Every structure is written in C-alpha cells, then in structure tokens.
Length: 320
Image 1: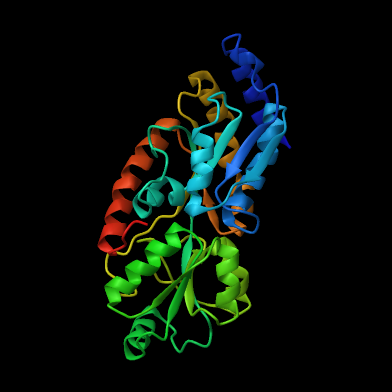
Image 2 (image 1 turned 90 degrees about the vertical axis):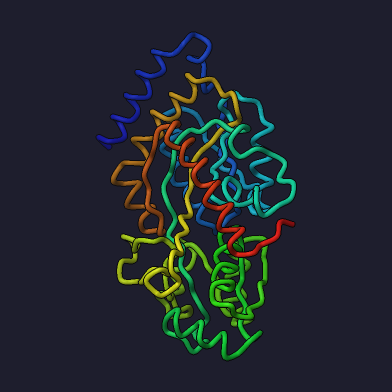
C-alpha cells in the first residue's frame, strides 16, 4: 500500500509540471494493444501492468488483443493511431525485431513509426519436447533427429518460435518439419498431444506442463542461464555454440507522441514495473521485469533489429 501511494503521489507531481494541454491527459481510457491473445505471456504482462497504471493515472487502462502475422497486425494498427498517448503497443521481439525480416512487406517501420515508452523486461524461452521423444538433453535430441530424418517436427506460435526452431534445424543439419500456428496456445495443444514433437516457447506458458512432466524442458535460449530456471542449461552450453535469443517486451506508442506525455507515462510506469510486487508476480509467470528510459528502449530496438536480421539470415529463412 505504501508503494502504491508513492507511485500515485509521483504521478500527481508530474501532472502538475506538464504544459496546460498535457495536464488534461488522460481524460479518457488508455488502451494497451497486445500482439498475442489470451493465454499468452504478452496478455498476462499487459493485464498485470494495466491495473496499477490505471490507478496511478486515475483512468481506465484497457487491454485489447489484435493477434496475427507474428504481431505485425497489432504493430501496424498502433502505428496508424493518433499520436495522443491513448494507444500503446505492448510490443515484443516478434513485431519489432523479427517480423520485418520474416515478411516481405511488414507495413510499418519498426523504428520510425513508433515512440518508445519503456522496456518491460525479458521472457525466458525454453526448448520443450513431448515426453515420448527419447532425449534428455539437446545433444541426444540432435542425435535422434539425425538418426530419424523427417520424424521430428517443431511447432511455432510466434516469430521467436520460428527463428529458434529454424536455427536449431540449420545448425544440426537435421530434417525436421516446421508446423506454424497462429499463437502459442494452439501450438502448445498439439505438442502436448504428441502431434508435434517440440517447440520453443516462453516459460510463462509451458512451465505448468514442465512441472507436471507432460513436457520435458531441455534448454533456455539466452546465452546466460535464467535466474528463474537456473538449473536448466543454455542452448550454448548444450552445444549449439553462440545460440543467443533474447525474447523481450516493451511499450511503444505511435510516432510523434508528445514528449510530455511520453515523460509522464515513463515516469509513472517505471516504479510500477520495478516494484517488488510486480517483479514477483511476473517472475512467477516466467518473466523477468525491469524498466528503461525511452532512449534506452530506442537504442535496444535498433540493436535487436540487427541481431534478428542476422539470425533470420543465418537460419536460411526466406521472407514470405
């Protein structure tokens, strides 16, 4: 309660310091658009952040999903909204880093068409397989794939799943079928049923199934072990040298959103995201929460574009 009161007080002081026009913001509900629907990590994060943000702004914060095309549909929608601070995109590496290289015409510029607000943190991506696959680590999985060409398949529900799966397939020089889905929940259903062999998915979605032993976790995708799952090896440690995929989330608004509104949103959001309560809540959901300045998110997105461009190229993925 004390922390919440401090957040509300800080937001009130910021409002008093804004120009007259901006002091009226927000005078109506604010909408956070998510790139993926209910049951996904993005939806979970948006709803956890929306409640205290609404309390601090003294206005309703609505979460609305516009899934499709690896998040490109949501990004294109937000890019075309008025630059007034009433519409934000909870973006991830899918629409902001990967989609521009997975699609021939993504319909927006990942840098020029958006105004950065703040980082939200990083997902922990796991490689999980159906328990019927006779492999207890990545090395055994690759050996099985090579000994049984065409027998294994991998599901994807977003661009991270596509790029990670194709990277593993390319690195291992293994014959594996890619089975794409509209979202992670649909992909997960078929992996759980054994219709598809494996997938790369966020810890938020798959951890209950790993704990129930209906899925087997083999590795995490980042170069360093996850603080949320420290006992699990990284893909790099497992032998896929240099495998480093940081799946991330942040909040952006349409380009040319007034600086005073960006400042208000950033200053209101940062203590929320960095609060122990939110960190703990999102940590239990498999997400490592931390905030940033708008400038830090700008620079991060530019670096990630270069990184994902290389990953897509190295995996031999052709844009569609």
